[in-house]
Image (tube, rainbow, N blue to C red):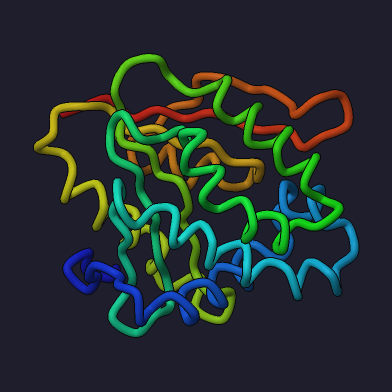
Length: 199
């Protein structure tokens, strides 16, 4: 199993490579497929989307990447899981350029995610991904563990949501448990909320 110590904080120079890797990791994710139904358009749009999320998690988050860039996690600190309106406005031009006609769906997705978050303080595992070419080597598990080891002393629980049912066993093996099962609107993707109690 890959050592969680083989991860470091991601910085601005990592932005393009991390975004491209996450785009590959989420190419068949149900939520991404709902946002961008056309596979060719999705392949074009996802690197810009993950570059935007990488930027948004810079100030109040923790961005970790493996030493070889094969896996990464983006975390948001307690009290900063939801994006405040001033941040939304600051990133509005980039959001419009990234989503285009998919912006209404993106806003509906963001609103649904916010509505299902816990009310108490928590560390939010915003994004976790491993390059498909390197899956099955323990890098994804090590990426999440690297974050958990850094935040466990905070004494607050950890939370995430996933639209991929196959991920549930992966996260449950790391100590998370399913707390909710919900859908975006009437035709949107199904999500599972998972929580890991503070140790």
